[in-house]
Length: 484
Image 1 (cartoon, rainbow, N blue to C red):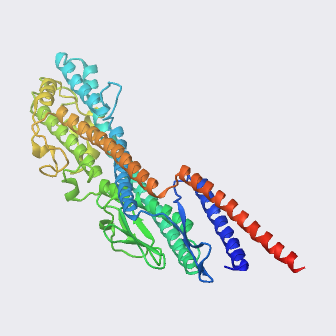
Image 2 (image 1 turned 180 degrees about the horizontal axis):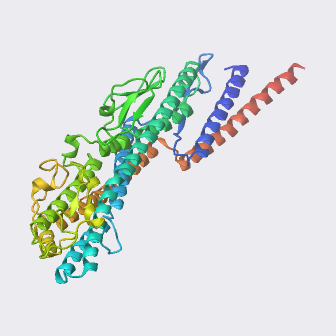
Image 3 (image 1 turned 180 degrees about the vertical axis):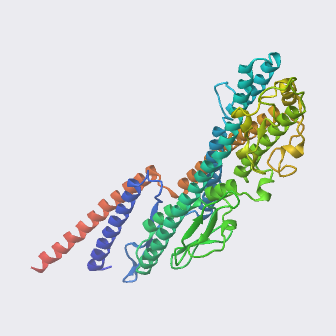
């Protein structure tokens, strides 16, 4: 090899070592960045005068583990679903006081017990008008509480709808960002420049989507990535899809569509936080009748309240109307029905109220009904048909032959248990997600000890190559001096 070729090769080698040093330094600097993957240089050795020359960097690429990354996306979707289920059902259980930890009775159970106790006290002293008024007041307390719990469905629905809308906004934004990065990556790759940092940014956007819905990704030979839901709904590719969400109502589920279209895409969102919220809001007969407590949850809750209201009114009014009337007849006269549904033929929890004639004093309370009503509340067995207002297993409650107290306790326990199970599932899903993330990081992330060791090797190589270059320079100087 000539001195000129050796000099050229040495200079090129120094340039290669400098590039590798910068690459390793960038790896070390980003060792704690969870969105960064380790970058490596692929070397090539060109021939000079028929002999191998100094190595040159052919390309800079990032370390990838696509199979593990897909497993991580699946774990993120599981965590997104379970964490949303945890949040939504915890809100519902809290509204019911189903998860109180103070040792006190939940409000509805306590008010029902106080209502029964008022009848019992009146039975012992039917001439006491204060006790009669106490019965009416306690009955009103129970009715108002059921009304309030029923009205909370609007608040619960709004929270779930807002959760879906927030997710759709994130989905739309991430879709746009991925499409922009696709353009940059294709352009950069076409010019022969490294694209690893851009791919890291794109993966970060994909990860934002993965918690919202289970996804699959495909990358073409231009480096452009297409993202689909697991059920085949395209999120982004050469164009960034945009989605619209129409909120739910008491009779219809919320609907996701492509912007400007009307066809529902709900079936394309099989997992993730969006699926959890859609399932929670689903009011269909199939959802409400499902044994899955996270499917049709809000509609089940409303139906269960209707069951409580319907059976309470039926038990109390039957006993009240069948009881002996006071003789002589009081003034104002005793009427019929302690409770009414306010003219509603359905949605019993919304309409339940104490008979307004008792409240305004145009009817007297049938005081001799006190013992009958109290015993009916304590002993009347409710059949499975009456517990499940939509038919067998129509609202998640499968136990028949309960008293009204047992029914209330059953509803409270149902939602407390579901909230607890969802909390445990979310914790488990989070642990799995962290495990998969760590596995991916172990494969693609930066091991700072390894990088520092490699950096030391490069520094030694650089020093050695600088010494070679210095010797070649001295040889050139000697030749020049000889020529003089």
